[in-house]
Length: 412
Image 1 (spheres, rainbow, N blue to C red):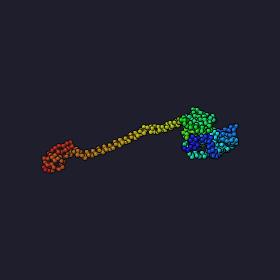
Image 2 (tube, rainbow, N blue to C red; image 1 turned 60 degrees about the vertical axis):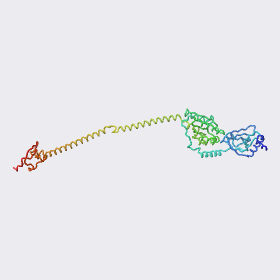
Image 3 (cartoon, rainbow, N blue to C red; image 1 turned 45 degrees about the horizontal axis):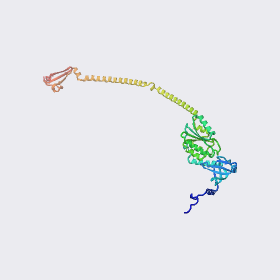
Image 4 (cartoon, rainbow, N blue to C red; image 1 turned 30 degrees about the vertical axis):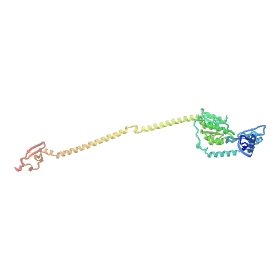
């Protein structure tokens, strides 16, 4: 049976020194490299010719251990301190004695302001293209927040300004304070943690991220991509007050409201009790004045309506109509009476004429009407119609008599 290769089984392991040397040989073949980051820690021991530096990636929670000659630190083109952005050239190195890795640096260069601004501008264009600056995503600030989340440096002027101005404007305001580092390599991580903590608190209605003025390097954490994306993810409205009026870090563009100064942030977040009271008083006065004007206007309108004849003397029109009706009735009655009288006279005249022309009037003058009784009471018109023995009925003015004809006188 073939014996397994060394290091491939527990029966034939490599000793520590061999593994350490193999790792060192592999790392040594990597060659030199340029690296950029922020100095998170700098340790220059007085009795040592080597300086120890922790170089941090500002966009991620990662770091490298750096070693370099002490003179390289003292002769650097910019004063090295925590938070300084630098570019280093070195070779990866593995120390077999301690089993540790570091980057042995032989050159240190500072990142110029122009390069920093150019990088910020490139990041601004990237975030803008992704829509993080879209005004439609901005959330409104509540009129009166129950609790204001405040992220700022410990005992900073920004903290004092915001709290004093807010309490002067609205004494009952409450703060959820989170003190963090506001510059340097650890600032972004602490600010992001505080932001997540306040955003997860249901009592916090608005979050204020504040810092006083400073150089471009001091304000670099507030243009960090991680912080900008974290602000965009917050469900609670975020107000930024970074630096002074000319300062404009990228987080101002992502935030829901950008305040020029910390004092301005306090004024935007908390209403002024005196101003609100004055506004309420003014609105009450305006409402009362508007109500009085409306009542006066309606009263004037009602007065105008009441002054109109139809309402001032509602029976006048009826009286006028009643008088017209009375006159019309009188006229109609007069005309009817006149017509009746005329017709009555006409009837009287006709009656008189009829009476004059009627048989009764003739009989009254001595005439008589002779009728043949046996002939159906026919009127006797000829003597030949009444021979002797014919019964006759003679009608005179006051009645009628019956007689018997003796014949015509000519017959005798």
